[in-house]
Length: 250
Image (cartoon, rainbow, N blue to C red; front, side, top):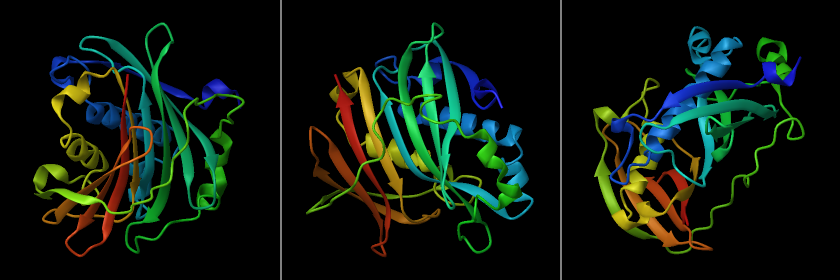
């Protein structure tokens, strides 16, 4: 199969309600467009959420690393490309490129996904599902590069509590748990406005445990390496919901 048939592109126009006070796109909005692109890419090939739900399966995002050297501005045209880079038995790695109309990049993203059984909440064997059909669409790094670092490790020493929030209706997605992009938005709310005047950002997040409407979430923070800030989000039970790293890029 030709590589171009394995990669999909989706066009987005940055609307006025997509941007923050600097005129740049909210990272959460961009993240939602990436997830939509992933969903449409998989749906076209027979393993999208609509098809999986009929078989009591769904996709769950495990890791997401977004590195944007510049955020798109209001009224700019953006093309989001997405492709599958690799498949391991329980996980698949999917990449994204965020491009200008002339093909130059705003940035890239890497993501890791698991297919789970919606009744048992346990991961499924991707190499067995539909006869391993997903393997037909793998694009190797030699065929299509994603020139940002992979997912990093999290090491928490003595993080400090910085915020506790209640979760509500608008936090919940179709799977019944807190939307993965909502965590990104809540974490970015912890930064001072001047941080967002920097042109770029790298945001890494690892999802650990599902949270649901009504859960109270506590945000813990610590200084990371190289100008990063590390975050850990916990439920009242003490279970870690997700961990994240944020670095603003000049």
